[in-house]
Structures are given as C-alpha cells and as structure tokens.
Length: 64
Length: 151
Image 1 (tube, rainbow over the protein chains, first blue to last red):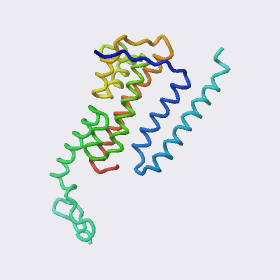
Image 2: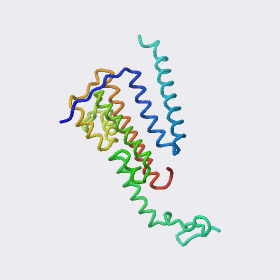
Image 3: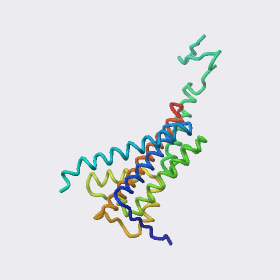
Image 4: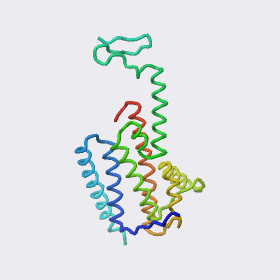
C-alpha cells in the first residue's frame, strides 16, 4: 500500500527548491571537478533566484 | 607522421596509434552501445552514466530527477496520460514520459489525482515536466559521452 504524500509550499519555497534541484543537475552534468560543480551550482542558483524575484517584481504593477 | 589507411582514416603511429574506435566496424558497434546507454539513461535516471562509471553524475541525475518527481506528485501536479486531448496535453505527456520508469512511479504515487486549481498543483505539474526534460537531457549527455564526444 502506497502512503499518500503531500506538500504545502509557498511560492518562494517552491521556486527555491526547483532552482536548487535544477542547479544541482546542471552542475553535475556540465562540470567534472567538485569545486567547479559547487561554484556552478551556487552561481546558477543565485541567478535563478535573482531572475525569478526580478520577474516577480516586474509583474507586480500588473497584478491588481 | 600521420598515415592514411585504405579506409581513408587518418592515424598517427607515434602519438595516438591506430584509433580503432574510428574504423567503420567499431564505430557501428559503438553507436549501438551508445544508443543502448542513452535508452538505459532514459528508462532509469542516472543509469546511462552509471554504466560508464560516472558515479557522481549518475547519483546526481537519479536524485534530482527523483526529487523533482516526488515533489511534483506530493504537490499534486498533473501527470499527463496519452489521451491528453489537445497539443499541450500531448506535450505534457511527452515531457512526463521523459522520466522513464519514474513516470509509472508518479502515476502509482498520485493516488488522489491532480489538483491544478491551486498554485501548488500547478507548480507540481512544472516539477514533473522539468524532471522529464532534465532526464532526457541527462540521457542525451550519457549518449554523447558514450560516443566519446564529450564527458
């Protein structure tokens, strides 16, 4: 019997989790050395969040 | 000094010797193996890299694709099926199917069905689609690595 799973996340939590997982995957696929991977993951995550929040702010005037 | 064989393949006896992987027979075998590795990587996320002993990438692919599917299902995202109806439904189905065997796990786990009326369900749908596309990318990477084009 498979137990029912369920998550309640805010928009920001969902976006951060998504960005983190995608950044990790990209880092592992595109870089070989561990230090390069860590740098890539941190930089990619930062840009994901920056652009996501930036687009959110840009859409704010049209949200009401 | 580079030499050209009868088959028109350039080899260097001093540095790289005869590169057997470039001869037609071996190339055909490599291509079939590379396709098999790509398909394996699609069916089980990370398997394509694991077969080539790229353990870090294999683990990374398996865990990230698995986490995206698990979270997508937990957020009650839409797991598309083949009778989606419109073009977007079919696109969603193709994207979801990109997770390979995890697609069936997602269908089995989502016992309550999708709930895209709420933002979480909508996010979940994106998580599932992203997992599929990411796994296809990883499978393509494994295929390319098996062909020796990049790693």
